[in-house]
Length: 432
Image 1 (cartoon, rainbow, N blue to C red):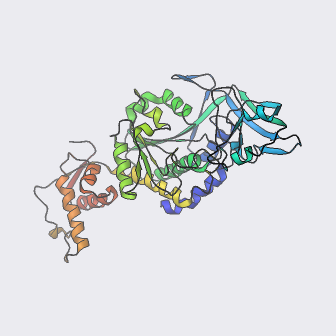
Image 2: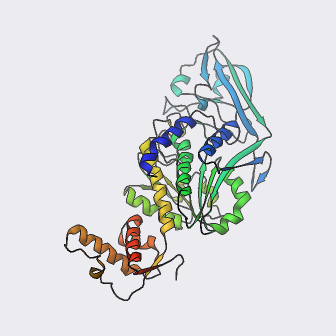
Image 3: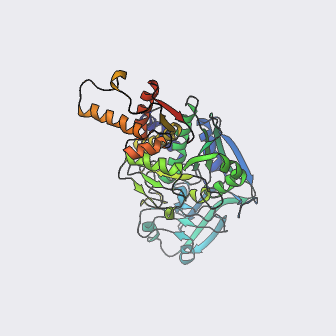
């Protein structure tokens, strides 16, 4: 599977999923997971009941909504949930009342600096309600009476999540997490699960992968806490690298969020891959964190999880607004995000400790590895081979050698294969 040819298909998935009203629980979340399961039939569903303790948190009530609107005193609908599911504050309690404009304003949200955008607002853990609208529309509201209706339900139910485990030769795991809990936003929400789904399909087609892979589709924050509460001991014992996959579908830039440790295998791989895909990628500090890496890298958990993104959450102007629509992502942007993730997993799969098994430099000419005619290209290729060998002492891993000689690890893998074919090299998974 080539990422470039997968981009249009992924964009089609986004078009299908975009209208669904997702939240951290409820029918929209289940519908989204069912769609992903249609693409990944081995995906397993899980649920946890309202009220259960997960570390310092408690699983919230389940929330569903069928209708919501504001009508003016001429009975004209001026805000309608059916037109855009961002119009209602997430987890709003049911409401049916008549308010004057001043009373209504206390429950309205808009962004003066982005007058055409509908903001995304939630109130998961407190009983509240509200509507979101473009500021230019809000300024046009006139004095009068307004009929406000939110047909929602908050009940004891469940929070759903799903995972997919792909067994490799080793019990050591690569952990890949994404969230499925935001309503109609494209880069912030859909790009993560879409690229994760395509990535999982790619891993499933690998022939005899060395590592095992665990893909997790969860509601953000509460979902990662739930998953950790159920699996933390296993994850700490088995996960050697992983990524939180989010905001990976536009085509503006690449971004990197390190783990709290900053020097895990995930950190090394992510920065190496992005450096060679886009030398101007944006690297952020752990102090700029904001997604589920907060839970995975928390003290006492300390999983080696970093994030490869396109435009990072909270750093692009459309973030958490209605402007983050399907025009913000593209087949090319999704394909680029998928390519970065595939390159990263390939790097982890191929990483090892190479050791030359002869003394001194090998004679390349008698093995047909030295060009008959010297050109810049042939000289460069020989230089790469010799630079690789000078560090192939069994103490440096392939990723470190790639960094030392400034060659993409996927190019260096070709050199490794050449030397293996000529019995000039042995590979060890562990440092010798």
